[in-house]
Image 1 (cartoon, helix red, strand yellow):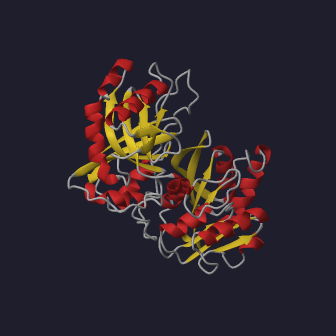
Image 2 (cartoon, one colour):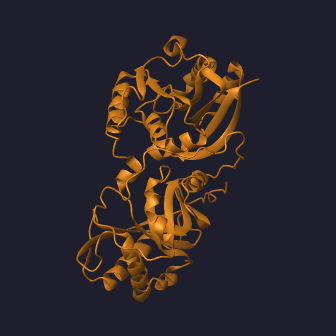
Image 3 (spheres, helix red, strand yellow):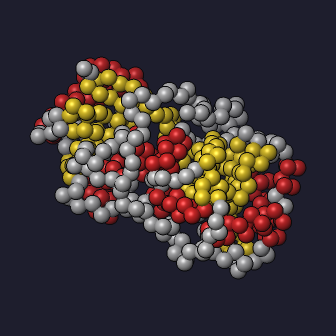
Amino acid sequence: MSKPPKKPNSAKKPAARPAKPAGKFPIVSKPAGKPAPAAPAHRSAAPKPVPAGTVRVGLVTTLGNHDVVLQELTQRGLTTTSPAVQHLRGQTLVLATLPREQWRRLFELRTVEDVFLILYDSMPMASATDLTRIEPGRLKRHLAAAAPFHPVDFRRRVDFAVFVKQDEDRQLYRKQIADVITATARTVYPGWHLKEPAEVEIWAFFAREKLTVGLRLTDIQHRQRTWRGQERPGSLRPTLAASLVALAACRPDDVFLDPMCGSGTILIERAEWGPAAEMMAGDSDEAAVRIARQNAERAGLTVKAARISRWDATDPASFAGLTGRVDRIVCNLPFGVQHGNAEAMPALYTALLKTWRPLLSERGAMILLTSREADLRQAAAAAGLEIEIVHKLFIQGIWADVFALEADE
């Protein structure tokens, strides 16, 4: 996995962490869940005919998550070429080329927050004088080529907005980039008016003195999901929950458990990923269980398909009948920030792993997310579990690791 850009002194951005190769848990399962709609919910207009050929797309995901996105593209049978990655503040832009006829399938991706059609790809941009490359004739050609992918008729009156994201503070400011793109777009289409919320969004990504500009094809529902009615502090984003499920290499005959489920996001993403023999989740917080059940119902899960219970995840009695039966335990552990306190984490982690270890089947494993590596390693040793880091993610301002734990033979 390639490193995010080095932290400059003038920018509040995460320091890069060294990558470690994945071990026993490569992403090998193919998602077989319910197909996503052919286009985002707000793109309800009839699709336009798209000419043959290829198209360059941009996929925004959480910082550090690009390798999972690239793997999901392969899993879903999308024929991508010329992949590239641009690291931004807290996010990563994955660039790839694919056949035009496959573009609607991009909305099936569950590890991606936003989908863009690329207008300008990695233009060198060292100073404000380089912005002259965004001239009206060139932008008009790019937007005309992008028109078949967007439901809005660019020739009529359109409300539009321009957003700029970057990797660090630079001599070329975001406002300068936004102003040039805005003025040029208005020159090309005089009927366009700057307004938010907008029917058309143009995003610019400025990283390592290269500028990439894209037309946004998704809205907030793509990353937040239509079923996400309620949240709790510290709730995991659905795209990250989907990434944990992917990293768990889940199978259709799995017995799946999230013992500290919060709002139910991991459980629901597991159900969306594909079938399972059994799916269970629970939490000690009564409000969390209520929210998880409501979200599961909105997602179309029945009580029979996915059982959500209130329990104490450290009490073996909570998991009566599950000894030796669970194939995958996938959980976002408390970091001791928004839930619990840091001093209590070592004892809590030890109690959790000692309770969960007897649940594992012969091929069972735990996929756990936390920023507290030392505490988890200590708890794993006490519970007789082998542990390895399989992935790194930047979540809510801090780096966290995805760990795979198996019974020590």
